[in-house]
Image (cartoon, rainbow, N blue to C red; front, side, top):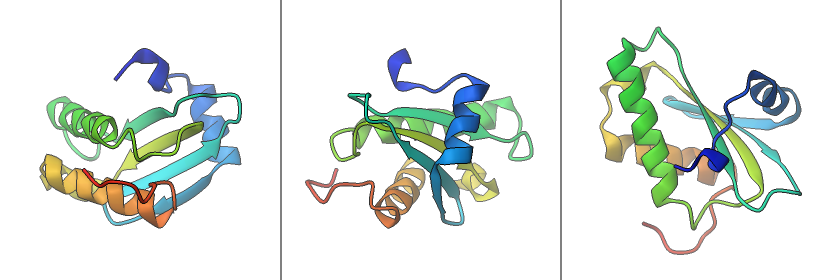
Length: 117
């Protein structure tokens, strides 16, 4: 995922939390905020230390980045997304995390009805 597609600064995370909307399922919480001046989406990932050690947390973040990369054509652009992983994600593989992400994105009407990958 390119650097232009990531949210890194705490101020940007807090702005999405305060002014955005959220949806959740058992595994993931998604906050999103529409940005009219952006041509592409940006994502910020948060995986708590309560989920596991660094190896586990980094693996979950890699899975989420890859899932966003594969769903890039279906995700509405010009949004900032913040994804918070919950505890059940530590026992999930990539396909389960992608399915959970697709579920929460479609629940929040952020996934277009085009082709499914």
